[in-house]
Length: 201
Image 1 (cartoon, rainbow, N blue to C red):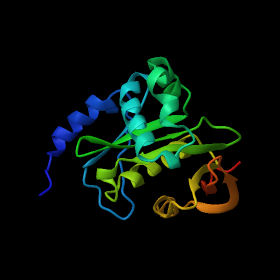
Image 2 (cartoon, one colour):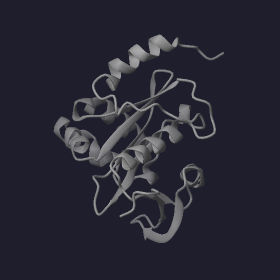
Image 3 (cartoon, rainbow, N blue to C red):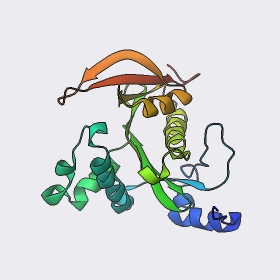
Image 4 (cartoon, one colour):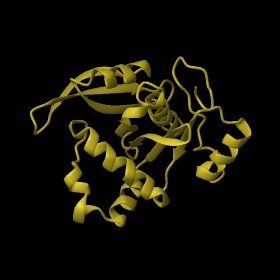
């Protein structure tokens, strides 16, 4: 049986994890086709949240190395340094972590705007939380941010074999551009893009 947390308590928790600091960035998470049940909480990160980002990122690189351009080796051991993690967040256009039932469940980021566009990157949902709307919250957060920035397009790259991720992006309106990128491991990435209506310059 799921644990029901009172709305007032969730509001207080939301303020503690960043809502009071940045009310615009503290988005109300939404699941596509699912009612808002207040179990999801989206937190926009600053460089002060580097430890949270680090924890999820290292877990992501270990869980799904095929999905990222970086490797666990590149970010662990002697490469695991606080300033690198702070720089990673500082140099992002935006970065989010989604909480489900108060547990960090997934992460995503977007590159700084360039030529009216941004790229959705570092998308990952922890295995116990997959299929529970976390991915939808993260994608929606980036799209909302891009719209607020009045950008015209959000792009991303996804492995051709990763059908679950492709379906997630398609639910949010992303389509295959036809562009392909061959990685060093021989696997192919497909480009998908979403044009934001009314923002395209």
